[in-house]
Image (cartoon, rainbow, N blue to C red; front, side, top):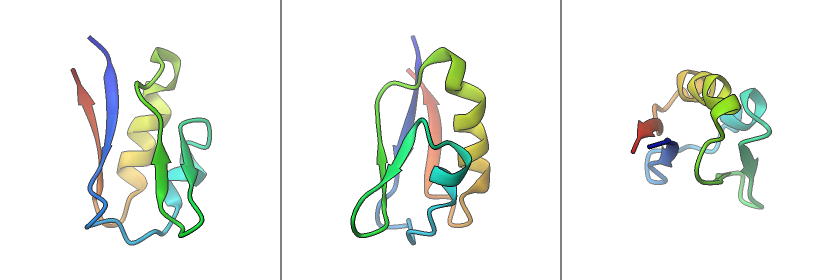
Length: 65
């Protein structure tokens, strides 16, 4: 079991705060939207949680699968 970030692209407004908070996990594409790798490394779970919290649109979720 591990952690994964999930993005609701329709809800995302492209603020980029998630990438600012967790730059090792989230890159921004040419249109300003997040690109998320999978899965979240164990040592990056806390930054992933911070990125979820930073999203003003609540478009990002951290799931355990």
